[in-house]
Image (cartoon, rainbow, N blue to C red; front, side, top):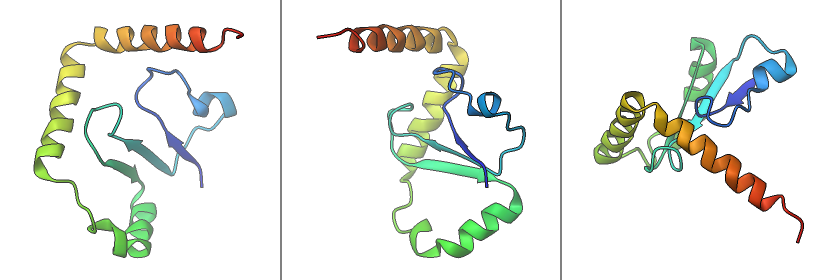
Length: 105
């Protein structure tokens, strides 16, 4: 099974092109850092998701996302769609921080 996790192209860590993978069975994303809320999601083919539902039924609804956090995530996505320059600014900030952390001590 090939698994890929990414939040857009902000980091440009596209493992699909790096390793020559065209088809993905499962895509996951966490909403905690990128969307300033909690939770996450995964998506894939019906076969993979059915297996996940059957294998993790004890965990699926043990701590479901409260409606206000789901609404916060949707609003964050709406803001990013309306202001694509925010992703460019985030990318530049990340690159700046990465350069800073790579300096020798």
